[in-house]
Length: 67
Length: 261
Image (cartoon, rainbow over all chains, first blue to last red; front, side):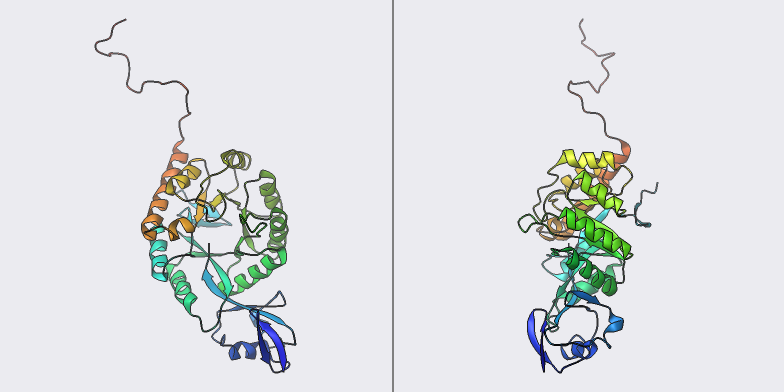
């Protein structure tokens, strides 16, 4: 297993898990999110090929009210 | 006569841009948007637990409003954070528009002018339409225009303070020196009269959130701001009279009865 950070909380995954699968496992499968890994934007078109590795810092964001 | 606000080639009938945060409920936010008659709303992106659906209703109402979306980079403290969040916003909201915020100070949330120019430069080269939230410094605004910003959004006063227009000299200077640049007063306004004054000074629009969201009756306050913005705009177009030191009668003195030399 690998350990990484999801929105600043520790989570575990199988090694080399694709981002698309990880998002489903974490409950973000319905879409309407945007993702950055280690501070870099990851476009939706790369979710399937993007493999998560140990110590990755994943940010998953959703729309909120803003000023 | 048409008097539309044009930003990045897109025209709007309203000069009021409204924020969507801090409302007591999504329904109140929806009613405030309707009452404001606004065409543009700001919104943001945040980390959320997937089980937390609080933001879903807000997002649904915002979509139903039909307003143009202006996502922000609120809270970003570095160029890299702002650029990454802008890219995430572009994909999720399907818009090139971004209200660029790079915070330079935690106490007054003052924009970091150096980071702002650098981030604006990067984002414009990436194809974004950047609307920078900035201070009222003329040179900063000129640098933002130099890198390709077509709109400037100087603060009236720090975010959420309701202090109104703190530095009229700087704001008047901006208006005089950049007469052809669309400029929107963004942040710090607390009362419709302050919005009216900014519009009378010739600013092109008003962006605010807290003054409406934290009113006792947000929809009514949204309508009050909309009316104030319209009044100020009409006054600017009509041309304000020059102030004078001495009194001058408005009623003619010729033919005055009971007149004695």
